[in-house]
Image 1 (cartoon, one colour):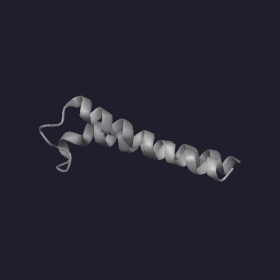
Image 2 (image 1 turned 60 degrees about the vertical axis):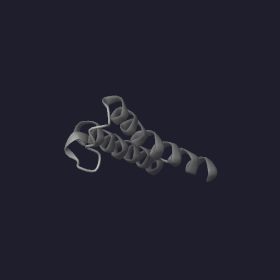
Image 3 (image 1 turned 90 degrees about the vertical axis):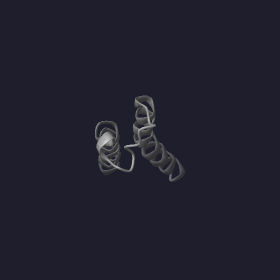
Length: 65
């Protein structure tokens, strides 16, 4: 049980790091430093960087239940 909690916390921490990298480092990363992306677009991409891994992990835990 404790290892599952640690794994969930690890997934959430990595997702938050990815989100912060997209939000604050986005203008400096050539792949996403597109001038046509607005701040709201970058915010949506950063939110998906958190939501998708955590949601997929929750679905995986539900299937294994």
